[in-house]
Image 1 (cartoon, helix red, strand yellow):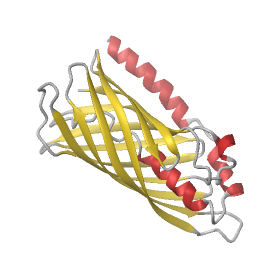
Image 2: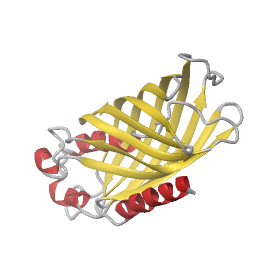
Image 3: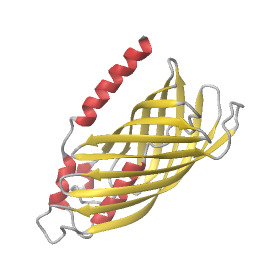
Length: 243
């Protein structure tokens, strides 16, 4: 009962923040130019690509996980002025509600959706454990992550694809992990009263992260990570109920 109450409180609070927010992505229409569009696409790809492998391991057949997670940049790239001056834009946060399920052959499937600051996105993907999971202390686990997302705001739409590889180590109370991958992002300008309407950019950018997943009581997981993408340093986090 305690774990259920704790999870519901957290999930309701997070969902309220996630789906009731609106704001600064609307500034895109006033600030986008042909020169800054590609830098915006690079930063957006890093934001959408984060927080897809926060446990560092596959769930296994019959496993299930659900909960909120998020990725963030601390400040956009200095040439990404599509939302305004980067120092004024500051930190940008993308929250998700994600559900994962374990399939045979060390495959996990997941779906996710989120909305914040005028940007709404949804997507999903797969994780595949290259080697069979083991509880042997200090054993390494490796997995591949593939995912796709679609995002839309008032003045642009985006299609995002990512592929990454994750390496984790089995430990008693927590699992450290590192990951590296590539984001492919296409951003298309829409409904802007200028010659840029219909203009688009397709970019490929690297992204990496270093994090720790903590196994808490009552089947709860907490993951915290730092990441690096086009925007420089950022962060990822998740809090989930796992069976």
